Length: 342
Image 1 (cartoon, rainbow, N blue to C red):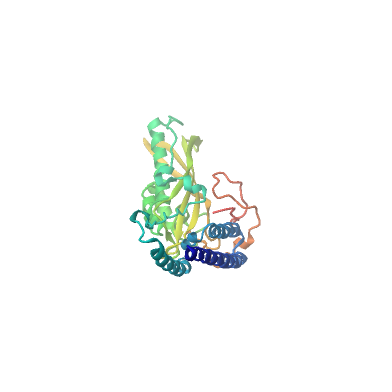
Image 2 (cartoon, rainbow, N blue to C red):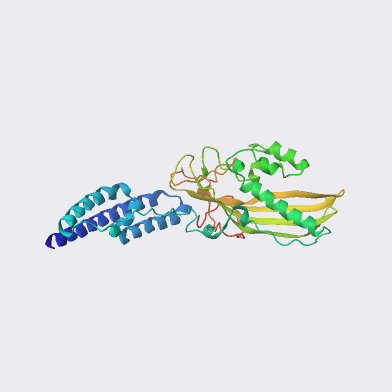
């Protein structure tokens, strides 16, 4: 038993040395990272650094997740030494007590954010009960609500559009009179006065700059409608207010992902004209994007990664941080604002 006591003592001393060394290294790296991060990312990264340090203090075995190359050699040496001593003193290990390999469950990229509890995909787009309103029948109102949902799906969940492709899914849902205008201004970097790049009506990740890290897209929000009367037309106005949360990464890379939060606010009017039901999007995908660069204006979402160059527009932001998970944030005068979290 003297040999075993000595081995246990040496094992404890070695683990203690490893923990102290690793903690010093983690603090050094965290301090270095903290010094160069943009303001709106500092608080979140600081929490991550502290979380890693606390895990290291809890148990040396937990370090395997973060430092597999550092732990493996030591663990292997201790294991072989321990097995040799145990065989000399205690005999063979019973089968039922042999160590069992455990594969850790993957952590959701939405963990630690409100998006974790959001519904997935189209399930997060909820519709109110349709009632006859504004001279339209209950069936007409229900059609308008379903059309609004289809527009949201096409703009924010269609995989081709998300990958930066032509937003065909949305174009097919537009009135014929509106399609020509939309396609004429699609990806137009220099639109005429009174027009804009219609790529902003959809969510498209910048090609070669980002891709979805998971097929899961979190959605939360609401749909409402009211009677409207304008320009001699009467019907209903449908307003959509939703958050779409994506986990993205650089193309072809694995590991850490970043969250992109798109706040989509839209307005659709429905009325009858010439015996047919007209469904006309007045505005779409207003609200803003969190987690993307402010200094690139091409209609695509350019994620801000940990090692991205500083955002020139961000440096001009002076207002209070905005909570991107709020459906009704306070109005902002700045085009680029600080985010309290991602």
